[in-house]
Image (cartoon, rainbow, N blue to C red; front, top):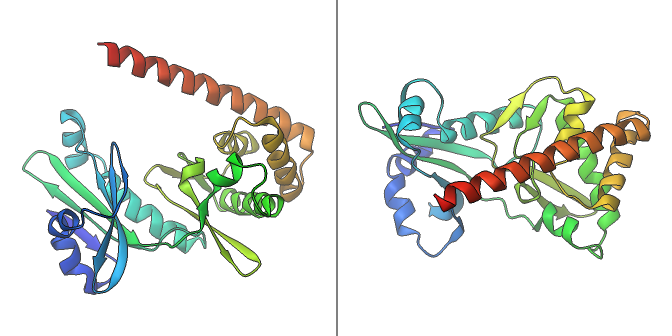
Length: 248
């Protein structure tokens, strides 16, 4: 067993994570490949992500050669906060290992009481204050890119939004797959292309991004269309592979 916490007050919480996680059966946020639960500790709420036990080869790789998803979530969250980007405050992670294998792993963050995901805005053309949210969201995305953050899973369900007064606060989650590098414009448009297939919304987002980046809209639009086609081909191929493996 190995773990790391942001503050000593959480040592017991992390060391006894299996017990805390199993006790909280009624507050499941998500349960599919991984499981997310709201877990209480000392009268505060936290979100705990239990990662699916990887297949045999990856259990060895994560044990000796590569950081686990739980550890990467923690490390990347700390780096995001250092860069001034919003993500739920990381508390720690814990890995349960045997001699040769990674078994279970958990990542813990503070509970972020958000109002909605950006997905809700993308799905509803009549969403209240939609244009303002879009504009502020693109400013957030541009800032993310300017600070050298490429979120590989920059999807609508991984962007949380909270309204505070007249402002909208954006916070990103599911951060174990990230790259920190200088992003050129093609890569920036690739990031945007993962959000929606709606032509009108995409045109609006590219227009706002062009203004933030002081670029010609037609230039970014061409880059975006290339990235969107690439993303669609990837998703189609992924679907075919899932169908093929499912039939086998």
